[in-house]
Structure formats: C-alpha cells, structure tokens
Image 1 (cartoon, helix red, strand yellow):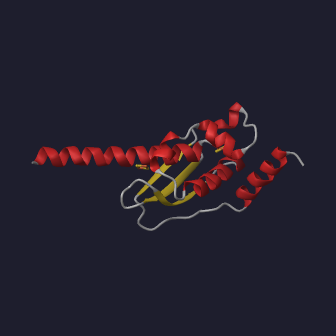
Image 2 (tube, helix red, strand yellow; image 1 turned 30 degrees about the vertical axis):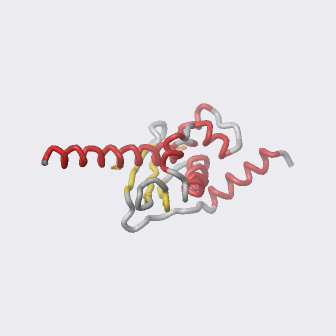
Image 3 (cartoon, helix red, strand yellow; image 1 turned 120 degrees about the horizontal axis):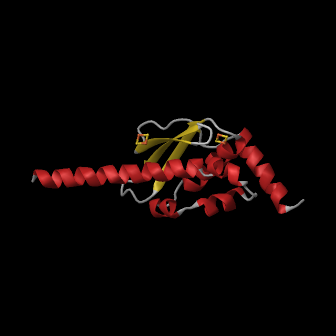
Length: 140
Ligand code: FES
Ligand code: FES
C-alpha cells in the first residue's frame, strides 16, 4: 500500500465521520465563508484562550464536497491548541500537505475553504478589536 492510499483512506474517513462538527455555545467568534466556485459554505465557531493567543476549541458545519469536508475536519483537529499566529501563517501548501494527496487546480478552492474561513474569521475578529480600541482611545 502506497502512502497516498493511506491518505486517501484518511480523507474518506474524515468525510464520512467528520470531527468537531456542530456549534459551540458562546464562541469568541463565528465566521462563514463560501467557495466562490460552487457556493458551498462552511461556518466555523472558534473559542480563543483568555490571552487570545491560542485556539482552544473549534467546531464547523456546512456543505461541500468530500475534499472540503475532509479538509475542514482535519483542520479543526489541527487547530485545537494551535497558536493564533500559526493559523495566520498557514498557506495552501500546508493544507495540501495535511491532505497528503495531489489536489487538482479545480479543487484547490475546496481544499482551502476551511482554512480561509478560519483565517478570515481571525482577521476580522482582531480588526474589530483594533477598531474598538481606537474608538475607546478617541473617547478619552
Ligand atoms: Fe460575520 Fe464572519 S460571518 S464576521
Ligand atoms: Fe463545493 Fe468542493 S465542490 S466545496
């Protein structure tokens, strides 16, 4: 059995039994993103640690093809306990490595959908914090 068979099995397993699905009550933030190629959406709830430097808990839900769902499931497993800075530094190569199979250019947007949702969610959350801080400073 070649390495990529093992990875294919793993993708199928995550697709059939996705980890960390559902909702989190009272998350630090929630973000929804769609794959512009097909309109499939993934929603992610994220809980950050108190110092907001670490991801404590992630859950996702949404539709999509096997690659997008398996990628979301595998990513949510990696995200638990990950530093926010490490999430921000992830790129498509990390996702392709995580999946361990060749992804055709057509399917790259499926593969990176969950990663985009997580990163955009973090960006928006911290941007809004900055805006709030600026507004509070202006009030003084
Ligand atoms: Fe509104 Fe992400 S969906 S901030
Ligand atoms: Fe929609 Fe892959 S076809 S996420």
